[in-house]
Length: 297
Ligand code: HSE
Image (tube, rainbow, N blue to C red; front, side):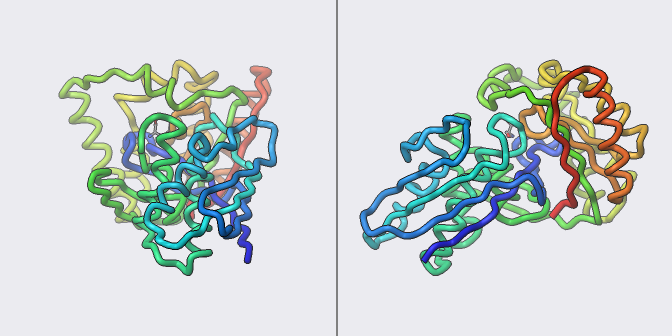
């Protein structure tokens, strides 16, 4: 038996919620085909030009599957074929998609014996290979869908957050930022007044999502800790934010560790206007880019 699945891109952080908030996109996505094998272990085949490792301990899907196999008593393994639709280093959860897709596919092939929370736990071992940290803010929404809050990683406590209709516009300027590098430049200490502003925004964003209060969502999409440091790496960041807001977006910021930028809108029409504003900026700057418009789901 084989299974073919789509593993979605995700936007981590959602501006103020560094390492704790994330949501799933409907595109772009990776396509993965998996089957059970009788020798224990994992074999990986990549269908792309990214030169990703195929050795299971160094591959994000491989590392996630090896973690899952430790909880499987039978002598089985997995053969995995991955076609990346999400560019590595794009900030749209490329590594998380492969890790999440791998454990969801494995669970299906094993008769769905693990819970979604257990699958998130296994998949974070893939994130560790990619960035050195087992953060779950891309993995959780890739597996649960929608918007998720990681209240705690140890022990893992995942809270799906209900939300009103929202559309996201993502622009990926074609440069690559490695998450490990984007984490290394962060300050390790946060002044108390910045922390206060940040947790006010996180609380406001969660309340705004649950109440369907678009104004509150917009006001809360502010990051005083991470964005000032990371945005320097992203071409046209300030212009994209300003022009997108002028085009009607509620707000937005860096997607994950960048370089992609995302903006949230109430409806698809506004999200398309935001897309046009973003295109104009990067065309004028002579920078190659990709855009995606998708409902949050
Ligand atoms: N929360 C992580 C970071 C996500 O911003 O480093 C990486 O995609």
